[in-house]
Length: 464
Image (tube, rainbow, N blue to C red; front, top):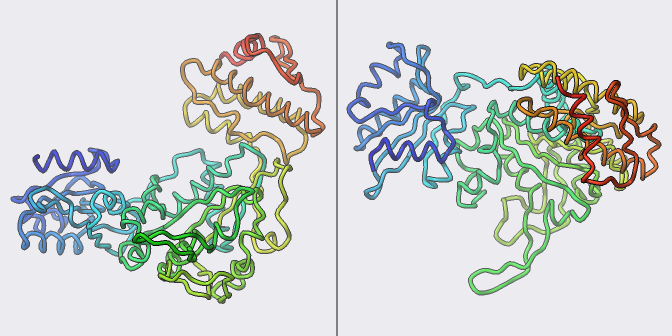
């Protein structure tokens, strides 16, 4: 296999576009210091440069030049990967990269012995949030709020984009559109499952963000979230021992990266008894008590776990970002002990998001029709806690849009409103007025799936 074939395969596996990297061969590597790294010659700027090297001196020269002149003013790279032969096969042994890039963490799962050499300073360019202006503004406000108060909950009815906004907050903090390489579980896999080893790596400490997500549910407990007891089988024997869980893992990460953010997303916090899940950490997560140690109710694992003993102090750099569905009244509301320690931000249905969604896709006429349906549904549902959010009204423009959107209304929106009505949510008359196309009565408990009359009437109304 040639170096070019190897690099093409690696780039494809790691999701690196062919237009984002350039390959340098041994004969060129010696010239890098006098050309690209010094920035004396104009060169196209790339995310990544692969340098193919075949002796130790070239390795030292390439690493030295990369650290000294990464991404020069006239061109260059945000990261450089060293391609070498290891035991007769091509491998990537080192990556030199600036903060805000994710090349090293992308490649680490394929090359566990990869050495990531961080270089201080921001990456060449910060990717923009590719979304509508109103969403971008909201994301910036949420980041500012999260930086001033490390415990934040996004609360609102279904479909308002709470989980979507949480992801955008991750992208903003990571300064990257692809946040999967920064997820803790992915990073730990790249270190062969050894979190404690990961915590000692300079490149890991200098990542702009490390994040993880937990989906909470009624069966979630303190033992699942903080520390619990479990049967451990090892070396042919078994024993009952303590096991450190996600909360302690992210605390260990935040402690190792004290000057950079670590984010834990808690999805649907009101689907569990969060006060019980947090247990002795309720006081410790309080912004006013961050850094103050509390005694954990379960003793540490015999092997040390993630390195946290009987006492835990929540690092100030750990951010907790929760989501909560205000329409789900079948489960317990968040109690006052939690509310006192979190900042709650209402994420309500936003008509402007619908309009801008279609505008940025050059489908303004579709946006007008979608917004009209949104307005009509909003008239039916007067309680803002259960109004359907804008995501129910977003349907990718293009061929067959009217038919596809009519299906979405018929098989997603109507059933949800019927469910509200059956629960006694006191909706207005379940009738959708389509003007010249007549009215749709969708209040019946069950409808004949073979009867497509209402859907066809909707499609006709939506047709531009």
